[in-house]
Length: 153
Image (cartoon, rainbow, N blue to C red; front, side, top):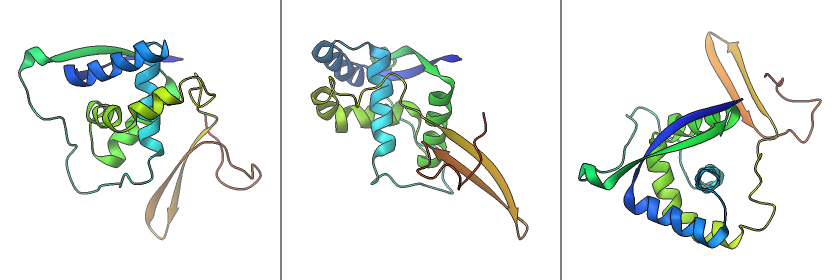
């Protein structure tokens, strides 16, 4: 199942994405998803709590574009989790990723790293322990499928 959504993108970020499109031959949707996935893989990004979601800096309305994106259902969940955990809008995450990882993405464009379906598994479970509600969110496949959290569709 796919999810159609939009991202509000500054023209400077869109120009960076367009450079990647020209250099790789990939579609805009593919480049956007690959940049957001690369941001999630960055272990230096820290989870934030107790604050509001940050958005991009304001600019003249004429410099912003609405970009339509088609995501697989798991991708939509993945990027929503990023927004919630990193306390940044998806548009801000994309802008930061375009500046930080574009060269790497273009360099690796023809390798298997830019898979159309990168998600091999998603599990979500709730545990109540000592009066606390614990949420377990796992992206990817377990190396030990018999242990760990149950997979939920």
